[in-house]
Length: 193
Ligand code: ATP
Ligand code: MG
View (cartoon, rainbow, N blue to C red):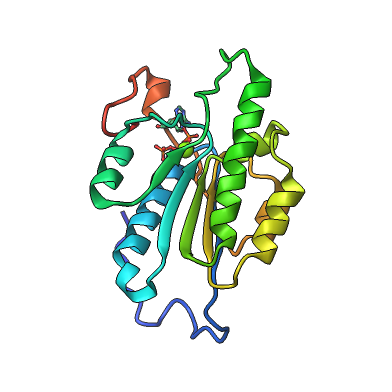
């Protein structure tokens, strides 16, 4: 390992723009897209006394009854998190029903983005209904463009459409370097769910 001298200059200059809501995207094939979005929600929720507005999470691929660690923890905190899906997977048969749920869920999430009462809205795994054609991409882009200017929106999921990446302010790609699953290690309670 090479020993380096710590930096003495600031890595970023002083920003000149006004403060405003951000569109934040977490995409890529590595682990951490949803958990980073939950971390962001937690941080925003911790500052609710400063901004005085709501933080809300919508999950497009989880069922309403999901009881993962994040659902249990957020319930204790009073941070709303909603599963909007039907547990769609490659085993799912009724794709029309999954598409219908995605559209109904989007209507709720869209209302939250536009209502002026929210500080941060998380759209977890929204890229999948977009890629499957269940949600109209143009409408999602339009909603992000016309939202109140102080609303932050975080969108997650693999294969993020390029138009969404273009519109976003902050985009992070979780790159797969290794995943334990590939070495045959099963999903771990409290780490994966
Ligand atoms: P997490 O919810 O842990 O932040 P994620 O949102 O980045 O993960 P998804 O694509 O939504 O990843 O997949 C969710 C589940 O799949 C998680 O249990 C995660 O550990 C697992 N997973 C993520 N990346 C991989 C991978 N490259 N190979 C196998 N499983 C993965
Ligand atoms: Mg995820």
